[in-house]
Structure formats: C-alpha cells, structure tokens
Length: 205
Image 1 (tube, rainbow, N blue to C red):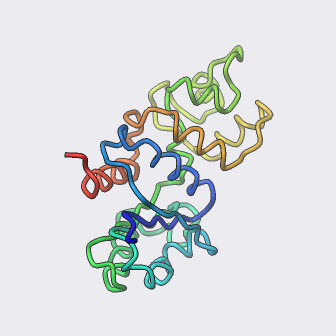
Image 2 (cartoon, rainbow, N blue to C red):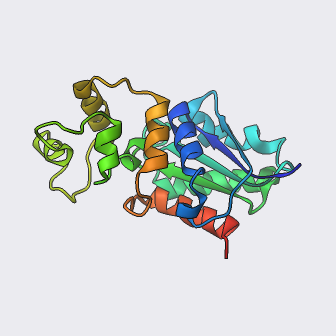
Image 3 (cartoon, rainbow, N blue to C red):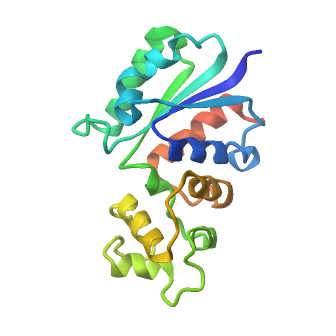
C-alpha cells in the first residue's frame, strides 16, 4: 500500500517531534495521514548531502517526502537555510521524487520550536511552580531580550532549564511538547514552511 508521507530526519528528537505533531492533524489543518519516519545514520550532514540517496529506492512507496535537519551542525552553515533547502530539493527532484518532496532546514536548530509562552512548556520540562517564571529566567540568563523577544541559543537554554529542573533530556520530552503546545504561536520560518507544506499536500478542504 502506498503511504501518504515519508519523513527523513537528522536525529531521534526530531523524529519524536514529527511523530507528535502528526498526531494532531486537526491543529495542522490536514487529514489523518499514513506515514513513516526514519532517522538518517549520519544525522544533519547525512540528511543534507545524502538524504536523496536514502529516499531514492522508496520513491514509489509514498506520495510525498520531507527531509528535515538543523542548520547548525549540518557542515554548510555558511549557506542560508533557503539555499540548503533548494539544494536538497533539487537532488530529491532528480532522484525520482520530482516535485513531491520538500526540505525543511531549521535555523538554528530544533530547540527553537520548543519555546513558546504555553504553560505546557513549564509543565513538561518540570518548571511549573518555581519562584521565577520561565520567561523571566530566560531574560535573566541572557537567552531572550524580553518576554516576546527572539530566543538566543535555544538548545543551550533548553538544556540549562532541564538541568535546573533535574529532567533528563530525552526524545519523549520533544514528543510531549509536540502533542501539547499551541501550533499557532511558533513563527519560526521552517515551522511555518512545514505547516504550509503539509496543508498544501494534505488539506481537509
């Protein structure tokens, strides 16, 4: 049976994020999907340079494909997110996918999607009930300029917060965040592209 979607990602945290997001078709404005998600053994550089090879042999098994990776750590950081996406999509086009595949390069990295003003973030990472609220702490530590400001060093901020709460950084945390946090509040360009792509391919309308 041909499935709707295959997603190739750079690591397990990204895998669990995608699996969590795709449990929420209504929030994404799409129908329920049949999909598979694979982790490239060479992580971000593998998705960037050899993602098309990984997906080549299964092009006839899925209607569409996504390749997802972090900009930071991909080995080609001197190029912009859009330039890298264009390169990946061209390689996918030539390897049997045509216009059925899209690349999502997250700048700087996945953790930028984690942070929102949702109380679910505080609860899931174990911050709820602390004297200083999470957004104030981010400002105090220099990770954010104000409560609505762009977050700096998102991965470092996430790891530091987890260390303070005693929570282990695990893929299940990313899954819990993906199934809980509002999808409207994340305005990161890569996330916006992901939502728009899924809606274009699998809209309920």
